[in-house]
Amino acid sequence: MLTLNLSETTLALNYGLLNSSIQETFAAIDRFEWQASDELRLMQDNKYYQDGAYTSFEAYCESELTKHGGYRRVKDLFAAKRVVDTLPEDLRDKITKPSQTRPLLRLVKTPDKLEQAVAIAAKEKPFPTAADFAKAVQQVSPTAKRAAKSENPKTQLCNSVTVSQQSHPRYGDSGVIEASAPNRWQQIVTFADGERLLINNADLDAPSVPFPRERTYPAEYTEAISQHLKNSINRN
Image (cartoon, rainbow, N blue to C red; front, side, top):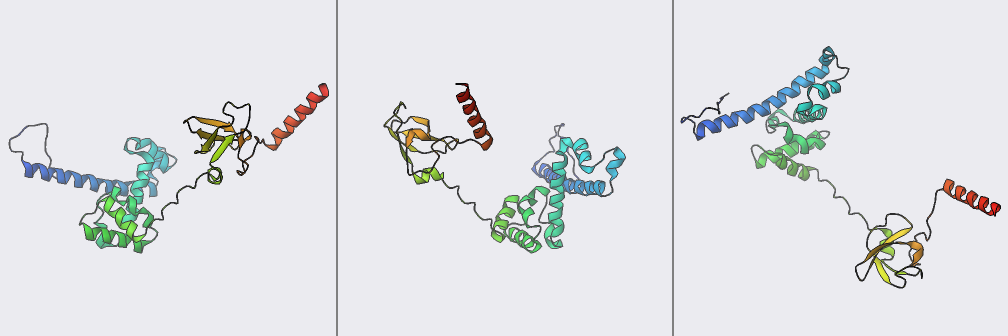
């Protein structure tokens, strides 16, 4: 491997020499990641970590490899290696570094689809990127789009309400329910002048909307309140 001492200034440094060094450096980084994966697997399978007084492989990773990403980074490397090992020999070299395998992980359990996705990406480019693999995976095994969240059923049933409680400062004013309420006994009402208020259901005239008119309590609270009222009546 070509090694340059960048701390020294030299007139001999040119594009060709520097480019070669950069290419070899990146190739070495990728190669050493795969090597690290093999060495870690050896550490785990043979339980060499016990010689270092660690009770588990995970504990070893979290202690000794913290600055390199710990156990999570190790799991990522193992997953990447699993993807490569699942592929036929002629396609393995299309994956040059572990990070490229992330979009391919969900196809590991279906080797035929995994092989197909890598082949499609390699047909487009000799050395596909992670984005290329992700695009190919979507062609081979499209993911279903998530359905949009439905609107609040209270809003669907009736989005127009009027304040019917005379004691309320906005008695007689009408507004619309445009947002989900924080609970089941109140509504967020927006009025024509732009004011938005949190109003009790009991203060609104909206009989077509099946929301509770009063605040409800768990059974144990209801019993406690009932007993408290009986005690108050008895004392009086």
